[in-house]
Image (cartoon, rainbow, N blue to C red; front, side):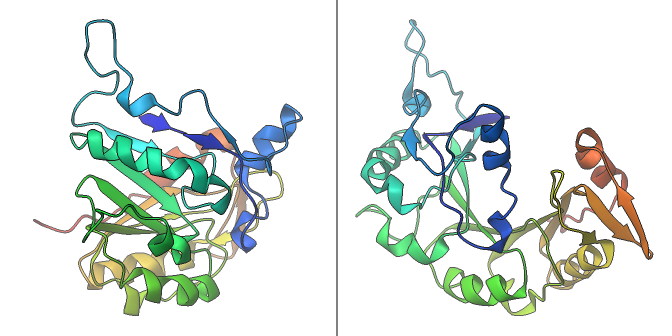
Length: 239
C-alpha cells in the first residue's frame, strides 16, 4: 500500500473527528496535530531513482493525504502543486478521502473539467446528519470516480438517496481507547442498501467496540481489520 502524505496536521471538523487517530498518534510524540505543515515527502509522486524511473510505479494506487484532509483550508497554498503532480502522474491513481467536500469546487485546478480520470474521491460521513449535509453536494460534483466512507460509523445511516454514481461504500467502526460503539446492525443495513443498488460494499474495520446481537465486544487494534474480514459480508457487484 503506497501512501502519500503531502502535509500533516488537521483541524477537527465534525463529531467524527473527536477521537482522531492522527491526534492520538501525535500525542505520543508531543506533536501539535492542529499545526499543519508540509512534509518532506511532498514530492513523492514525481520522485525518481538515479536511473530516471519513478519511485511510485505506474498502475499503483496512491493513498493520498491520510494524515490530514486534502481540502483543508490551511493547505490551500500547497494544493496547486499537488494537483500538478497528479496531472503529471496520470499513470497512477490517487485516492483521496475527505470530510471537507463542501470546499471541493473552491479547490480544484482550472483544467479539472468533469474530473481527472486518475483521481478517486471518497466523501466521509459518520452519521445521518453529516450524510444529509455532505452527500447532496457530493452527488452533483464533477468527479469521475466517487465513493463514500462511513467511518467512524456513529449511528444508523440511510444512504438510499445518495448511492447513484457511487462506486464503493466502505464502513468502519472507531478505534482507540475512547472509541464510541459501532452496532453491527448499522453495518448490515448499509450493506443491504448497497446490494439493492448494486454498489460495492466493504466492511474494513470493526472498531474497538462492536455491538452485535446485543452483546458488546472489545476488540484489540491489531484484530480490527482481520475480524471485519472474517465477517465475510463484503459485496462486489457482478461485472
